[in-house]
Image (cartoon, rainbow over all chains, first blue to last red; front, side):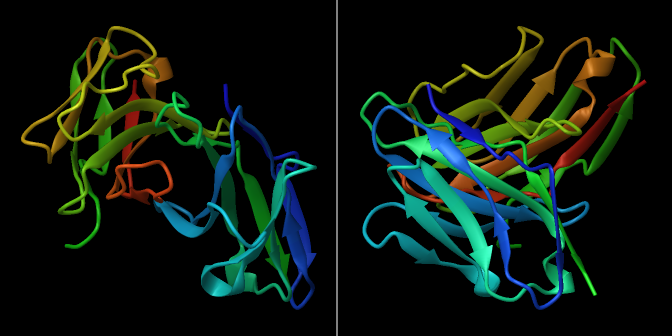
Length: 116
Length: 115
């Protein structure tokens, strides 16, 4: 079975400082990994994904994420946070192995709050 | 519009009533998903449709929940005899990728409140 853990319910950071939102995963085969962002009263928006290749993936709005196979992690990062980055962030995983199923499994989300 | 469209955006119903939630995916997307988002509990997978294949219903929480997808496009999620614990935001998503590497595009959800 596949699973995702986001160990922090909330992350607070000052504007201009770097931010990290943590994610670890568990799958049988190789993972397909995704980050989504949800603004208040809106649906989820895709930020970035890791399928294969370079471990550092760049996505929308200046976000990036680093895939670490040995630590089974896919942490979301941004070098300089903005107040407008304040939102709910979800990590998700799908197993690439045959028979791994088609559903995308989401973490419970991390609320990011960026303050002036 | 070009995105995933869901209706109604808000639905308030009485316990025991049936409700139908509609999803219109992005044109050309063959895969369609339903998820449920409850406060503090992340996203819960409900059901997945891919083309003409049999749907993956493994996430449906009870036999009161059902979904269909007509003509490979519009989908309807039906909840019969609603209970208060069914209150949540129901999110629909579509994807054009027949494999498992494609990202999902989400609608803005249908907020269901059962009184």
